[in-house]
Image 1 (cartoon, rainbow, N blue to C red):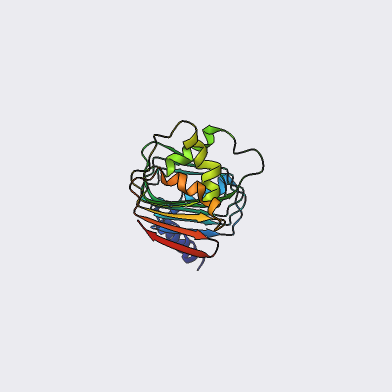
Image 2 (cartoon, helix red, strand yellow; image 1 turned 90 degrees about the horizontal axis):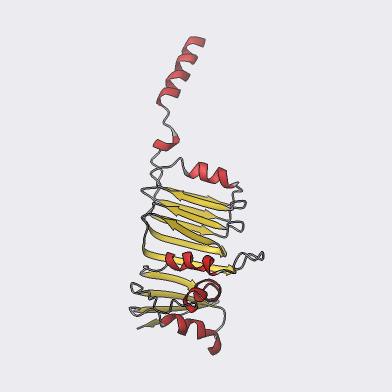
Amino acid sequence: MDNLVSFGEAVYKSITPSPSTFFVKTLHLTSVSFFTLDICSIVGKFKFLESLNLTKCDGIRYLTIDEYHYLRCLTVLDCPDLYFIWIIHVVLQSIRFRGRVCQICSVGDWVFADDAMLHFREGRGDGGVGSLEFYYPNLSVIANVRILTLCKWTFEAVIGPALFSGRKDFRFNELKELLWINSSIEENKFDALFFFLKFCPSLERLFIKVQYSVLNYVI
């Protein structure tokens, strides 16, 4: 019997696939505490991953998305310790981010072809947002999207400074649909939106979300 058990274990080990051969297409991690190296190691095991979603995961200071040839959708929601996202040689169709402001950088062949959400709701409280070098990468992330969700705070603190600093020739030429999240319905609270619209020559649909209400306009 001992020989059979040993034989069985040997067979099991020989046929058990390594994580890199798993055909996992969607990975959703919620309320899990990680060190940066842990999350990069775990995600790196799934080479066929198409969609990665991190929600309320503490302890991640930076996230590297490197050579995931199948990855198309990246969603990061309410991960308070995250400072940087590096996207290396990955072509994404969708990126969605909500939480404290962070820097999103890309290296190599990359594109955000369809939609993006940048819903930064607060600063880092440590001086992490203060230089133009910080703003430009985030502006590049949304440069060619067709569908964009953007909140007023994100525009004023992150995107606007890049446009104000000599990039007034920049245009979101591919943008067709915009969801703008505003903090108030007061008229003077929409100045940022009106300024942003000057950079959107091809916009067709505009949605405005004010707290719990949504206004819908077709241009």
